[in-house]
Length: 473
Ligand SMILES: [Zn+2]
Image (tube, rainbow, N blue to C red):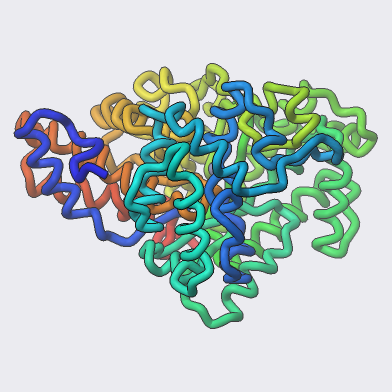
């Protein structure tokens, strides 16, 4: 891989970018939001084989190949209800990726994959049709060695902290096993109760039942429900969590009267809640989450604007997270006013906002983060977690929000071996962007060095209260 990849082509800017990148290249990785399965690190078993490691957990790869007409079954994805002719030979799945690797040119997936192959696995030649099987063998052999076990890689990647994302009723058994093992890696849970907020979803009664079972007490009223959420937050906090996470399509926030919230809760229990009911209940529950966050100090993340399962037939056949989610235009200023008027001025509260709608960076999110003490702007997310996307994010938010009202980089990945690839690309983009400011004498080199280090870890540590300092209790 070229040592200057991602840097501005202007030789003067590039020289500064190299120096700034050198400042952050080897810093530890702070990963306060992501989707790695904690069982990986609890079991510390060898990864099975290259396709299961690098293809199947990567929805960016699945969606591109699907878009080019390759059925998910050929990539080894089994339909939820069984049936179908599913590819079981991982070598064929790997070959399919290699045969189509050109599709990823110019996308972040190519940069991440190239980094994983070259830097994580030491593969010297590019992946293509001819090299696919020898590279498969090479990675397979390495995966069998102790240095490629998940915990050894965690240490080699210099991960200081890794946050997972966990359902509200999750017993956090893997997190407990990690701590009990005596291995010092810091893997912390994140409380994500989305499924309990989605009262119009057919799975809601089962989710409520799981919550009730986790606490060993019945939940029959909205007051019971809120108390249950409080208790689970406390449990997550006792297991090391510093944050909660909430995914909604529309980030509306509005406190309902108690009777109204109760009526919606009972309608949900009767399995009669409509999508409109759900939107109102979610708006109310976001207010409740903020109220609880003031008390328990957990940082509240809000990921808004993904229309989940846009491709209904695909979701019905294969389940969630198979690449069929599409962004929608998102409004934050009016929608968040209720929540921010209630808690946005309170330094005990911390709200980190993520968007898939880039048009809101300069017009809404940077002004909100640049005003309300409680608000930080989360990293460029998902479709915008890319070379150009991260650059656009900096260019559109910094002049209004400043750097310190942003929350640093989050890799947001479920593919464990892509973690260092993603942080490396983010550090390169930031070094190159900062180098442009230095070249124009907007900031001087000493300031840019501090900014680079902040972006590489300090901002995330602070925003997510990972050092415990800012939490009120
Ligand atoms: Zn996420």
